[in-house]
Image (tube, rainbow, N blue to C red):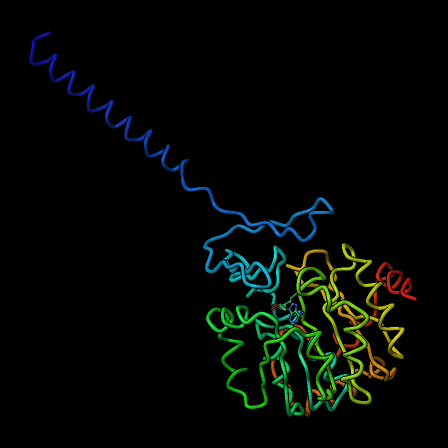
Length: 322
Ligand code: SAM
């Protein structure tokens, strides 16, 4: 083989080798794509169970004076807020909890003028409450200013209309201290708290519920974030026991919220007006029409009434509350 042919042959081999190496490198880089980050909710670690979320981008992370605040973009649920490793709110399913914590107590009451929210720093519930024309004044008492500040930046769809509404008043304080001190009286108290850990623990205490009762007008109602019964039965039984020592009617209603993993979420119910939870679909529908039939994505008059029909295992958990 001539010298020229040998060189051509070697060049061809080198070109082939180069192409082969390039292809391998491409595959390798494709394989080496940066690992997607996954964030776990650690609320049920003691049950040996974690729910993890793939993260597109961490938008905000801060250890505040009160809790660890983490906000991230999630491919399916959109923006998600976690406080101390517990999911608080996601863009995808926030409407379920916000609507059921707002419209059930307000349409059951029928003429709530003065409303108090304890917690609720993301302002999602405040936005729903202010849809009710009967409401003349809404006071929100949130312990952590950082939650409100970040909500203004990341959840403007809630904070903008809320902070623009003259009926709204935002107070930074511990909810326990506020209800223990205030001379104000309310027709409805909505406790949109974190779980009974860290700053939220006191909001599940008898002294807190007793102080809330002191702040309620005659016929007033209190609703509470009360966990997922399948994983947190003791929390529900404990709260309802305390309600029943203080109020004529103590119980709960339910809704299914995908990111509050565990099927049903329980919302505590406490009032001296036993008739409130018996309000008929017809009456609720009439009140809704009078309120202008504003748009909702979960709550309806039928869903409202059905939410008090508890599956047996939850009814049994509630029945344990003496
Ligand atoms: N929907 C959420 C859930 O079910 O877990 C709760 C959302 S909301 C963001 C909870 C708020 O309660 C937080 O902003 C937290 O700072 C506030 N919070 C916790 N303990 C509090 C207290 N003692 N007084 C007032 N606000 C409190």
